[in-house]
Amino acid sequence: MSRVFSLKMARQTAEAFLKEEGITTLPVDPFAIAESRDIAVEGKPETADGVSGMLLRHGNNFGIVFATHIPSKGFQRFSVSHELGHYFLPGHVDQVLKNGIHVSRGGFITADPYELEADHFATGLLMPEGPFRKAMDRHDPGLEAIEAVADLCLTSRTATAIRYAELTDTAVAVIMSTGGTIDYCFLSEAMKSLPKLDWLRKGSPLPPGTATARFAAEPGRVRAGERIADAVDVRDWLGGTTRAAISEESVGLGSYGKVLTVLVSSQIGQDDDSDDEEREEDVIERWTPRFSR
Image (cartoon, rainbow, N blue to C red; front, side, top):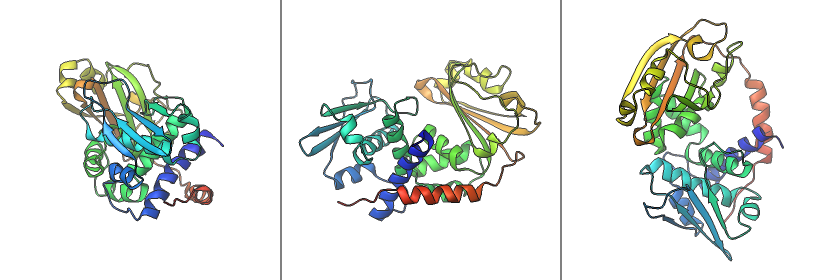
């Protein structure tokens, strides 16, 4: 099974669970889901940092411990949902709980396939495609839309932005950076259609001369949660051969010292791959497990 397919399967598994439980509205409550499976959930002391969550097993009893040193309900809900991914996804319990306890450091930054699958399960659980699309379509594309949907889903701006880029039909790029250095970049399918674009690689500097690069050079403003907006040429960020105007919006994420940047273009077109997507969804549907108590 390919990595892309396994991650989509993880999201589909979460969405299949919601469907069978009759959960159709946002926000989804991962704490209630854990309780429905008799999984004890509690927060670690605020002074204990380092990991996002833990899944524990003693005999047939399970428990989840989540980090509280990061005062973000979105982060904590995602951490619990990540551990639920290990609980629900086929093969995870046997693999990750060999010693009765599993420590997770989620956040889409690991190469461990089990951690990535649990991250994507959490995404599908907290931001299921159908309700998420309806919510994001109520707003014009951009940072404001991401923040509005994050408020609805009770998810972090970061996780919501990644899901937004994955599902939107608009040309969107989501970039996370720290101290002027790129942590990661997610592009929507429409943005990927740009010919000869330059991928923004982890560890590379923010493009010089951009408003975001200037903003990131002022850590006080970043910590204060300030935001900036600009209108630029897409080539200033992604290179390539296509001249197109894009909006550039960035917000400082407070004490994390990180900057979330959202690029949006209404000019850059997208290919119509709907038939291929429908065939792929049919395959995923046939392989999606069904849940029972």
